[in-house]
Length: 233
Image 1 (cartoon, one colour):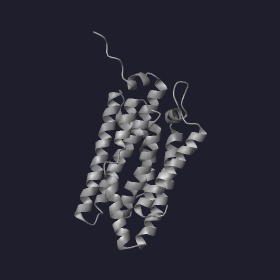
Image 2 (cartoon, helix red, strand yellow):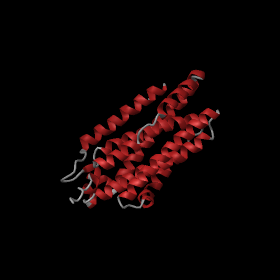
Image 3 (cartoon, one colour):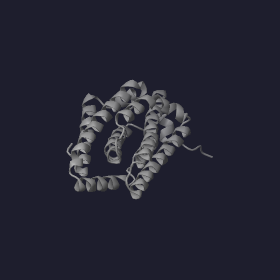
Image 4 (cartoon, helix red, strand yellow):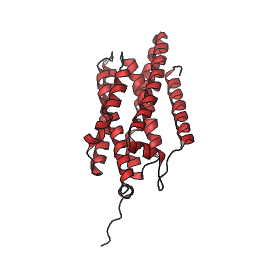
């Protein structure tokens, strides 16, 4: 009987440098997902209506489902998910401390704008991954219908009290700055991730011009999200 051919992921992971980069990237995404779950669960407590609490709880549940998917993939690669996530605890902890919501509306902006920016960043990086890992990352960064709720509720609150728009616009701009700083910090501090971004002899990467275009796209997407919320970027 003919032996089954190895998967694209298995073949790619025969390169130790690439394997280390994949584990680090998945560790970062996994920690981001479980952090988002925790934040949304906390923000749900501040929501004024039961319907809003339920929606935020549902969003939190989706984030945890994504975390479980990535953890399973890491285990399938022979990696320890907790060990892969641990190096990112400090960076994500600092980010969430600096961007802790003061009310549930700021939490909604964070879920829509902040998490959207993170998803954009990792989606860009996913283009450098093997097909199997790329599929897992992209599926775990899918919106799952959360955007519509966030946009509708924030626009409704702005219509009720226009003064809210200025405060939330400032919050959105702060999230943008903090998220870009975090993304640059994580990439710079982890050698394997840096190697993934820059590529190698047999792997594509991003040169300085491509990296500049990446951050331009991130900024453009952020501006669109802010406009969707009725906020100035």
